[in-house]
Image (cartoon, rainbow, N blue to C red; front, side, top):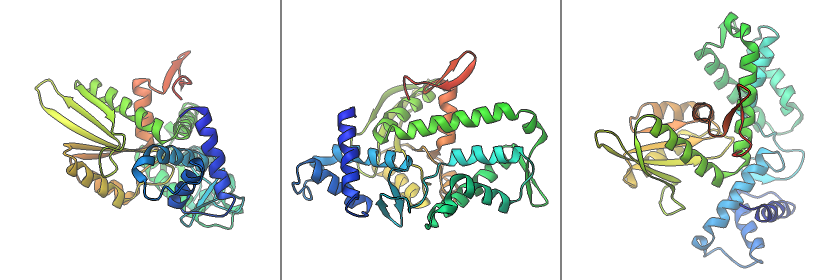
Length: 324
């Protein structure tokens, strides 16, 4: 997306929302109408697939930056809506908080509300999202051995505290990486994740014979296709869904993607999101053999491993400005 197109869409979205709050569908439809001189595009969905996708990417960026707000199913502009949140920023804040000493859940919750200013908004949706993120982050930090829970108090393990500087540095890098990746928009993310997954397949000894975005040519929300062959000649058709988002992917969405994999002849499916999966979605995906979820944490890990979007500079990992 060039800068002129981006600027026009950005301004149009703000102009549309200046007249009042709208659902995602109505916002996209009205933006298309204004960009195309007010003509009725209601019956011409196929002709406007590309521009709808571009508008959707800009809307996601504006939502992430807090320029526009999303609450109760509608977008709006103003200071009274919910605060946009990102899970990796919450994680960084929780670890920083625990560096100051052990905390119970209520103390962590109160600190996060104050830090992210969700206590200043009349909406409770940002608080619900924050609490959901907090619960998942605490469980993951326990599972990975970074923190421990004892007598109702969360605290950093001794070995974590000894390596606190390196851990904080890596969390900061992850937060910067995922924020930048999200702001690049959905179209960029589709191409980025396909390239990253291709590098992963090749690193595991497979030959990638095809790797491309589908450009809307396939049904069921499939954004990319990758065909591989291993050294024995076994062939796989991997279908990918790429969601550049801040909210959690729920179980029904994951089930829908699995159906799309079957419907489009895929042997495997990869659902990639810059955010994370709801616990029910994680449980569902863990129970099937041919479909996996790749979250922001996984994407960051692969970016560091294959140095794509991340590079080494003076012996340290940093975000690669040429890509992001």
